[in-house]
Amino acid sequence: MVDIILEALLDTLKTIPFLFAAYLIIEFIEAKAEEKTVEIVHKAGKLGPVLGSALGVIPQCGFSAATANLYVSGLVTRGTLLAVFLSTSDEMLPILISSAAPAGFIVKVLLYKVFAAMIAGMAVDVIDRRFGLARERHIHEMCEQEGCKCEDGIFKSAVIHTLKIAGFLLLVNLALSIVIEYVGPDNLGRFILNRPVAGQFLSGLIGLIPNCAASVVITQLYLQGSMSAGAMLAGLLTGSGVGLLVLFRMDRHSKEKYITLIMLYISGILFGILADLLPIF
Image 1 (cartoon, helix red, strand yellow):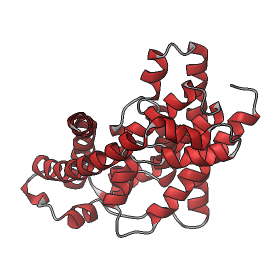
Image 2 (tube, one colour):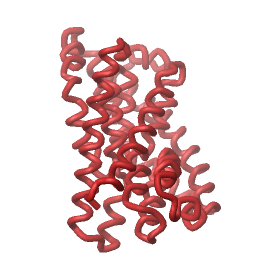
Image 3 (tube, helix red, strand yellow):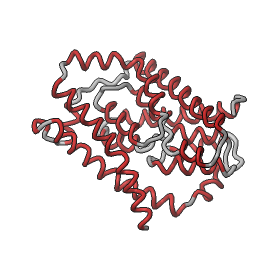
Image 4 (spheres, helix red, strand yellow):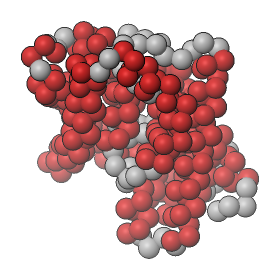
């Protein structure tokens, strides 16, 4: 139990620098930038999925959480958020490297995740613009929702936001770590073993677990031969670290988060199935 608590605490601590940086940027923009500057940020969002898919593939948990905050604040589009969620790899890369996986295979996985994230993110942005679903929200609404005193200064306000979310993440990470510990990766593998197509659906559900441990379990199951490359990719694509937790916590009064969740899951499943159909892996 002590190890579980320490692991949950470590997972949470790793996100704090990214959370604080995101909040500091948000507070600075609200305090210093004019409306025109915010409009420029919104207009630049068309290229967001491209940048988000490239940056999201870096193996760390915090970037997805930071992007979720920027999305709730209206600074990035849903497509950009989805691109980051899909490309986020968490612990996959270190595990593949430490397991002596072929370098060519690792490169293929990373490039495929970037490709899938970019295509899905751009498609979502087109759909949102076409049907008028693009998010319109001002940054100050998040401050009002969280009840912070932004007039006390951007640094203090950013600290308050960060501590609130970090405490929330610690509790959820602890609960999820206990569940994963007692279920075990072997039991999870039995649900996916030798199940074409269904494996993608099941792996995608595991990937939705908002914890870095999900990517560890999925990658280990693949290395143990418990799933195909496509099933592994489905889970790694839907896995967004703690990004989903932050999204649901900060956007709790909106139904848009459920739309984003469905889009994330469907995208992961489709590109996971496509990976097994194409002669790539």
